[in-house]
Amino acid sequence: MRFCSSPYFYSRRKTREVVVGDPARGGVAIGGDHPVVKQSMITCDTMDTELCVQQSLELVAAGCQIVRITAPTVKDAANLRNIVAELRARGCLVPIVADIHFKPDAALEAARWVEMVRVNPGNYADKKKFASREYTDGEYGAELARLEEQFTPLVRLCKELGRALRIGVNHGSLSDRIMNRYGDTPLGMVESALEFARIARRNDFHNFKFSMKSSNPKVMIECYRLLVARLDELGPDWNYPIHLGVTEAGEGEDGRIKSAIGIGSLLCDGLGDTIRVSLTEDSPNEIAVCSDLLAQIPLLTLPAGSSGISLDSAWPFDPFTFERRLTPEIVLQDSCKCGGGQTVRVVVPRATWEKVAPKIRPRDDVRPEAVYEDLNVSEIDPTRDFSVNCETQLMTVKDGVELPAIAAFRLLAAKLKRLGRNNPILLKDCLRLESVALEPKIALLRASVVIGSLLSDGIGDAILIRGETGGGQSLRLAYNILQAAGCRSFKTDYVACPSCGRTLFNLQTVTARIKERTQHLKGVKIAIMGCIVNGPGEMADADFGYVGGAPNKINLYVGKTAVKFNVPEAEAVERLVDLIREHGKWVEPEPAAVPVHA
Image (cartoon, rainbow, N blue to C red; front, side, top):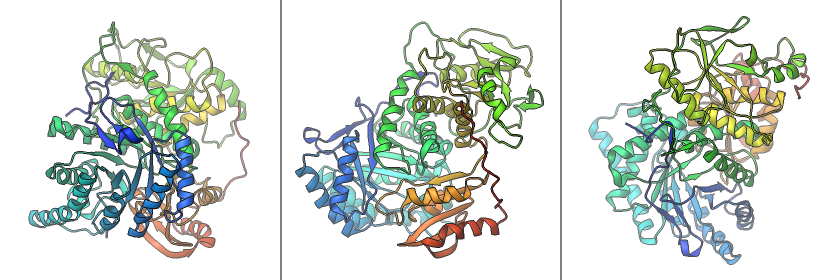
C-alpha cells in the first residue's frame, strides 16, 4: 500500500471536487485543483444568534473560508436558520458547517439551513458505554443495519438539498462496536469512516470529505496515511477530499507545534484539501497559523519532476505503523549517549551553547546535551553515492545539499538501509541558514514540520535547531518539539480542546488556572475538556482529566474513568490537585528558575 507516490517528491493527491454551497454565491469548492481551504469554529452558545454572527464575521475577516458551528440539540440546529439568515443579510456568504454529535434529528434539522453537516461516526446514532463484548458477525451486521437506517435519511436530505457532508472520525470517540472489533487503532478509525462512506455511496451521494483527528500527532499521521491508502485500494472513484487537523492541540507554542507536526507533515506528502488548527485561544488566531503553515509547504518540499536530481525509490520507513529506526547506541559527547534505547538528544551550535550554558542550573531539564562543532559526525550528501565503514558513526546531511530537509534525511535513511547500515542520525531543521533571520513564529512552524515529520517516520536520534536564531528560544523549541512528537517528556503535557458552543466553562481561563497549579509536574499528562463529546476517549493516554459535566459542574477523571462527579467549578482545580496527590504524582514546585534568554 502507498499513501503518496514518493516520500521524496511533492505531488498533491488528486481528489474529486466537493462543493460546499453554491460557488457562484460565495460557496467553496474543496479538492480537485483548488487551493487548500482554511476553516475554524466559533466558540459561543448556538442559541446566542448575535454573538454567533459576530464571531463568524470575525473569523471571515481573519481569512476563514468555512465556519463551523456546533448544534448539540434540535433547538440549536433550528437556530442555525436565524444565524445564517443574519449573516447573509450582512453580506457574508461564507459556508456554514453544523457540527453534530449524538443526535440524528439535529443533523436533519441543521441540513435544512447550512451548506455542510459534520457527523462523528463514533457518536452518531451510537451510545458509548465503553462496554467490552464480543460481536458475532450477525450481531455486527445488525449494528450496521441499524446505523444505515439512522444515517440514510441525512444522506438523502443532503443529496436533495445540495448539501455537503464531512465524515469526521475522532480518535477519542470511536464506537463500542469499532473498539471491540478493531481496538483503539488507526485501522479502527479508518473502518469507522468507511462504514459511513459506504452508506453514502449506496445512495449515490459523493459530496463528502473525510477527517481522522487525534490529539496525538503520530497517531493522526498514521490514520490519514492508512485512510488514503485504503481509499486508493478501493478504486479511483474513492478519491474523496481530506480535512486535516490535530484535535485538542492546546494553546501557545505547544498547540502550534503539535498542529505543525501533524498537519504540516501530511501537507508535505501531498495530502490535505482543508485544514483547521485547533487552539485553545480566540478562533481568529487559528486562521493566522493556517496561513503561515500553508505558506511554508512549498519551501519544505521538492516538486515532482524536478530536474537534475535522481532520488532513491526505496521507502526508509513503514508509513502505517510507527517504529523507531533501530540503531546502535553511541557516545554523543562526554557521557551523553544517543541511539539504541536512548532518548532523542538535543544538540546546539556553539554560539547557542555560549549564550545559554552560563544560565543553566544543575537540575534544569532544558539543557544542551552536545555542541555540534565538537561532534564526530559524518556529513553526507545523500544524492551521491557514499560508503560507511562502521555503524557507530553518527551521520547527518551536509549543509547546502539541493534537497529540502525532509526529503534529504529520508533519502539518507533509505541509502543507509540499502547499504545494510543502521547508523544513528542527527536531524537538522534546515540545511542552509537564511540571510535574514526568520520570524520566531515561522521558525517554529518550519522546525516543527521538518523535525516532527521525520521523528514521526521513526527517523532521528538527535536534533539540531538553527532556524530559530535566539539561543534560549531555539533550545526550548527543540525540547517542545520532542515532547509534542512523543519522544521526551520534560514538562507537564496538556490536552486541551479549542472550545465550542458545547463547552461548559471558559476553557482559556480554566486552562491558565490549571497550568498555574500543575505546570511543574514533569511527565504528567492532563486533559482539559469542555464537554464529554471527545473527553473520555481523547483522555485515553492522559493521567488525569478535567471535563465539563454540567453547567458549573466538573467531572474529574483518572485515565478514561470518571472518579469525581459534579464538582463545583470553583473547587475543581484544587480537587484536581488533590486527585493528583492521591495517586502519588504530585510534587511541590521548586522556586522559580531564572528564564533562559538570548
